Length: 536
Image (cartoon, rainbow, N blue to C red; front, side, top):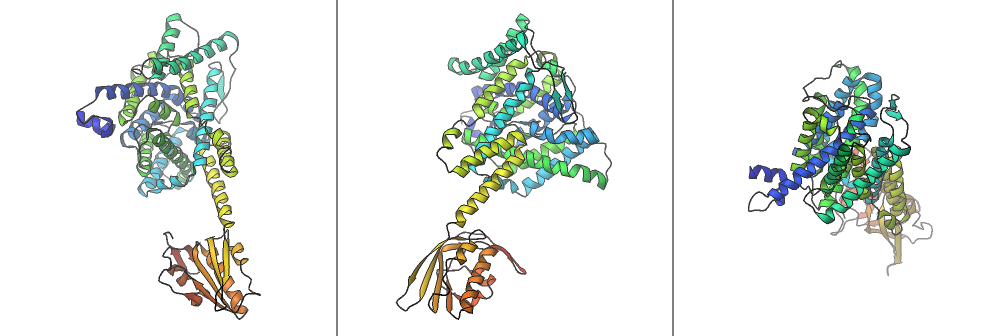
């Protein structure tokens, strides 16, 4: 038993002398806290997607359990999320829930392929300003999602694109709701200063729920959202025609859902890693998410991905192993099958208070200080990704942030191209090119040379430069052609072997040296594809 728990918990979490009961207590209580926080989220996201609440709850259970068992990092929590629900709603409204199940299966298969091909490593291309914007944007999204709990239960309706409308609370009900939310937040803030035996969020939920039930306080409860009572999820093959037309319907949704799910999961993986000072496997996480969604689609779930809010609750409750995620999933199943009457009595105010504390803990408050110190473009990217995350969705925000960061980087490097010029005792003029030569700097490179006034012998030294792409090669060719047309001798030094082979006119002008660089050029030049890598 000890060996099994140690394996699930990542052996570093347990003393070598044997199984640590204290660690098990922390993991179980953290899992219970997460499970309680998962219930209203899963129900709410099911409403957004236009499906039955049990479809969201089953997804939270299955996705949460599988990713806890085989995911890329212990401590992460996965389940039904709003980022995916907003994409699903139009599919459900147009074609029905069976097409959603088929889409979730295909989504999972796509994620498995991404993991097997090890494409998850490309998440490292996401710059830190984009990460900050992602965290801040998601914190705001979590906050805004809780505001719907301040509407009178039963007044929201579906417009085909999710739940909308509803009457806002006012008067005594609103004051009572706010007071209980504030009380929950106060308990969570004070509890760690009193004792750490019980996770603060669990204590907040338990104390507020007890007060509401004992004194019969009339406030919205989990049961007012919907009944969560149900049985075990059963195997179910989506009843859709196995035709090309069906594939054409579900494939675009599956690709978008797979991309959003992986982006959110991998960014959450990195964030949890920074908080716990641990390393995780991005490709393993992709495979785990894929397996989880494929299975979920066959068991009547709406699919899911990593949840930053619940992951923060888990980590800040002290969880550091896989046990907490497994326990959370099992507790959630128990709520559905046997404990729904009790869970439905929990006041929504307590769960909103927990999520508000998650928002406070998740938002990168130091980003305000950082934005005053970093380059303006980085500060702009932080704000841009935050705003786009709130207004659209996470995937679009991250892609926009990466593109803007990449363009800014390209522009900065384009301005770095320069050359030191001097004349040798023999009368030859030497240009020592400095800075990367690529599509952004190719025009500036050509402008470095004074073909008309240069002597008859010119040497261009690339020792301090790097030829990066086809545009760079074309610029070298154009420069060589100008000197040849002027009848002047030109020599090119310190170009890589790949440049030797890919250059045509200028190739005969290259002077071989023992210290020529050996980096590769990534280029598709003429009929010869060059897919090379390396560094100088």
